[in-house]
Length: 261
Image (cartoon, rainbow, N blue to C red):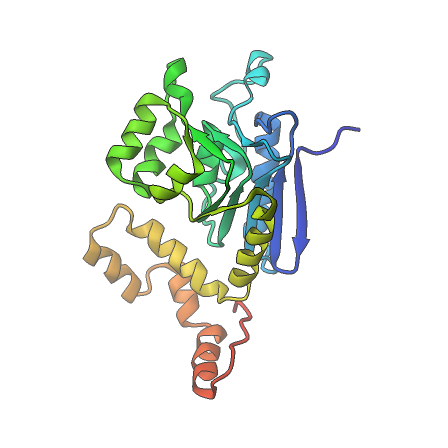
């Protein structure tokens, strides 16, 4: 029996998701469906608070679409499953933090997958590109996401030329949060995940929903929806035990105990 190309490991409130599909961690339709199921279950599990996404091995994070699978009949515009390509970038209501730990090459759909993370850590040897332009196709998700993450003119250069760039340049433009020596990448990812897992999950949910809601809104309209508690996660937060716990802990000069309710 073949091993699953998507491996998971739970440690308390943290879920590690490893895309492990030799030789390059490319994604076909089956793998995309599996990843969508994993991230959907993570989203819906009240005991999980943070996810880490990385690739197997030390050469590839993900090169994107599996061209061999496409040649074998997988439709490029086929059904990628819940969450769209890679199971994450179109997953609705993902109100929990996701850390992308880029352990090598992240190009095409692989870079788009990394952009689906809230924070990106990169190994010092990681490289990036959006080479779709060279084959006459469009990096659709990156065309939406990249200009929101880095300066517009740089995003357009990368989209229009398809050139490769290294982790140092990615960090310079703010695409990645940190560059980490390859041997320390996962240690740093777990350290950051544990920090987030110790925080208030209802606040994280509110932050992520507010950010999504505000993307296409005027400032005052977005603020009005927050103050009127028209966003579900904000309403839940303001009615929660955790909000009372935060105030009590501050008054009592102790660390809060978050319950996520």
